[in-house]
Length: 338
Image (cartoon, one colour):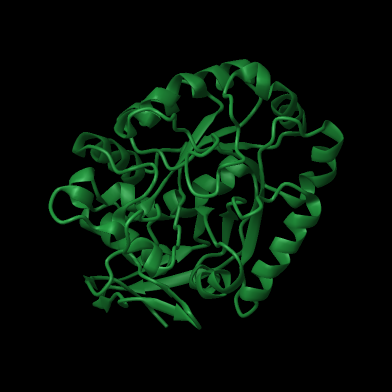
């Protein structure tokens, strides 16, 4: 039976939520991943050291059975002082910038993406070598939002050449091209954007569990993302953007945006890279690139996968919380060895 071992898997963009949802979804990542970069868009968002440390402790408690390290982020504000960031630097791996209202729990995000309005915080981050993660979308037509954001990435990258900038969950061929234009630009890509296009979401019957922001794009965009991932582009890393919502908030009018992929990420990525004869690049894409980009050494954690059928559960439950994963009820060709 064919096997493959993933060493120190890293998820560099993960939503764990809080309270009961945190207790449900966090162990589904910590069981197999060595570490993950945790998003700060709670309600209220994580903007203080006290809130950050409290959230980290709740995550560690939820994952206490596993050898797992939460890499914490701070919700970006344009008026953080140098002294505040210097004090919190050792507790975080990055700051996460959200344009106001652009996605889940981002209402208190940045209202203006003008470089001068962002300068106070960005200058301090640059001096302190704190990376900046960005949800790069405008409020324009939904299919063009990421493309319209490209000039903003370029403006920040050129204005702060010493600032490491991560374009989060890129979805377009334009974003892939931009990776090679600026030395300080990097990116994450999700599992679902490597697999689906807008047609999978809405081409037939609407599939709410594939609805996310940024929305899935065109076949040529997916092809560009897939080529970069399969060839382990040195500036690209895996970030699931696994974003759980209760079933009743997905299967309703006003469907929440987010695809829940944490429990199946390693199996599907192994299947995808195997199908394309690129398994030798998977460890770089899912671990080594991120360690080099963020400059840290991941915990040693080997996960063995075997080429045998795995049936994805219809849902995952914890008390009253029910979350439906991507590919619910479907068959995958790779399984994680218990």
